[in-house]
Structure formats: structure tokens, C-alpha cells
Length: 350
Image (cartoon, rainbow, N blue to C red):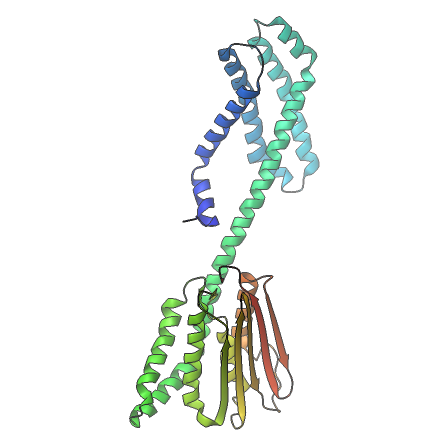
């Protein structure tokens, strides 16, 4: 089972000290392999420990002070002045230490004294490499934080949406159920089951980031069936589903605000002769959803009062979950209010 990005990041930051230890051991082995001097292994180890002894403070000072204090704040001149100053400070000290440990190799001592600029180049390279590492790490960290923030936003948006589900729907359904029980109608048990399914779905099944598309469609069907009891023959309601929905997943309650909008706003003053038409079509990973309802000719509306909070909420959720893979169109004239939604699901159906 593959770890999520968040779990990988958590594991990484919890084991920072271990990662540092592995890095320095790897660097030591790397330096030993590529040090081709014909010298005893013990002396080569000492020499590379000296190198790491200078690299480590330079790298850590760069990573934990210079980069966050200057480079990330756009103070580029001050940053590079500090780097130059550190290189100028470390170079003679490293030359002196290297000179002392080469006391048995006079030729190497003379080479060090005559080529001190090579030490400076080495330290500059280490500084630049640590700077690049810090920048890449920060980009990765910011992406993780952005991803986590998006997930938190999606969760809060979903909770808020569930709290905004029209309470009148439940009261009206209970009233309809009460009327059916008084008449001892055969529809009463089925109505109870549908209402139970809706509540179960909202309370338990749609708490995940994604749900099966088939369950989302079942929720829509139950909702419409209950509304049909309320409106009866005064309102024409059609629902058409095309395509194979199994195994596909989608964020929960994505269609709910649009459908509630039809009943809550679109037909409230236009029951006689009104209609609602809903189409959901899935072609491989391309999902198309269309909902259209009649509108009273005297009604004037804006995006704010039609759909209200629910519509704004679902727009934000779509932008978070499908930033580049969705298109939402709202078409309105004197008689009709229509919404068209295209969503491109990925290969896993999400």
C-alpha cells in the first residue's frame, strides 16, 4: 500500500536527524571513493573528516539562517555578501588545518599554499549546492502545506454544505409521510426507506474525500422521489442517467446544491406547468451534468439569490478538487434556469 504525500512528509520530518546522519555517511563514502590520492586509508579518512567538519557548519548556517533570513525575503545582496564572507573566513582556516595534517607530505603542503583558490571554489560550490537544496525543499514543503490546506478546506466546505441542506426538505418530507400514513398509503414504507437512505448517506457515507458515483446518483434519485410526493402531478420531473457509473468516484454532494436550487428557487412560484429536467452522462472519464428548470417570467434573480450559499460553496469545492478539470456554465433567461457541469475524472475515477 503506497503512502500518501502527507504520510511521507510526516515520516520525513519525524526522522530528520536520521536523514542527516544518512546524508553525511553517504557523503563520506562518496568522498572516500573519489579521493584517488595514493595515501593510507586512515589518512584519507582524517582528510575527509576535516572536509566534512568545514562543510557541515557552512551548510547548516546557510540552510537554517542565511536562506530563511535573507534569500527567502528577497535580500539577495546581503545573502551573497554573507556567503562571500563565510568563504573568505573558512578558506584560510581550512588551508591551515589541511596544511597541518599533511606534515608528512611537503609537496602537498606547498600545493595547498599555492592553490588556496581551489579551497575557496570548493566552499563556494558547497554553499551553492546547499542553497539549491534549501530552495527545492521549500518548494516541496509549500506544496505539501498547500495540499494539506486544500484537504482541510474541502473537509470544512463539505461540513458547511451538509449544514446548509435545506431543512424545509426534511420537514416537508415528514409532513408528506404523515399524510401518507393517515391514508394508510402503500407508499409510506418506501418513503421512510428513502428518507433513511438520504440521512444515512449524508451523515456517514459522504464523509470521505470521494464517494462512488453510483451512490451519489442514488442520493439524487431518492431526493427527487421524495420531492415528487410533495409536488405530485403539478410538476414534471425527469431524471436521465447515461453511462456505466460503477467504479467511478467523485467528491460527495457535488450535485446537491444544483438540484435543491431547482425546487427551492426555480419552481416555487411556477408549480403549475413547471418542469425540472436532469441529465447525468458519463463517457469514460468525462462526466456531464445538466439540470434545467422552468422559471416564473416575473422572477428576476442573480447568482447570489439563486443557489445562494450552496452554489457558492460547491463552486469553491470544485476549484479545490478539480482546479483544471471542470467547467461550470450557468445559463439563465426569462423562462429557464440551466446549469451545465463538465468534470474530467482521472483514471481512478476520482
